[in-house]
Length: 112
View 1 (cartoon, rainbow, N blue to C red):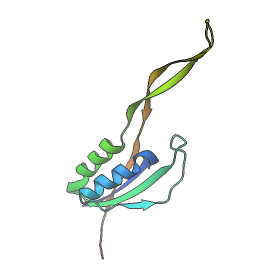
View 2 (view 1 turned 90 degrees about the vertical axis):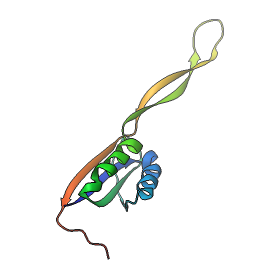
View 3 (view 1 turned 90 degrees about the horizontal axis):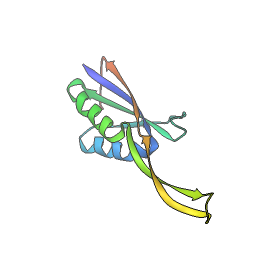
View 4 (view 1 turned 135 degrees about the vertical axis):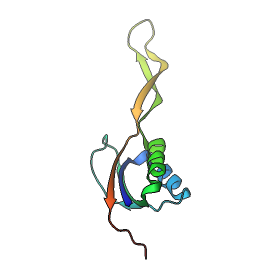
């Protein structure tokens, strides 16, 4: 049976996901979408594929767009003490990424 993946990606992950899927032979259709995915731009992609390729596609989505943490460096300002001014930056680990995936059964898939 063929499958249909609908995946909602954060904008930051979009290019790398599409590139990797295309390199592995998956055809991807981008749908216009809107919504609040952490108040960032999101993309919805649609992938029709045979069931035996499902795990490979899901693995790519998880690896390239799954939840992860990134380190950002937050500058701080000293507001007390003998000298007011900038203090060293503080590394912060923040969550990012994430993809919502829907996998649907398809009775038929044609390419013309």
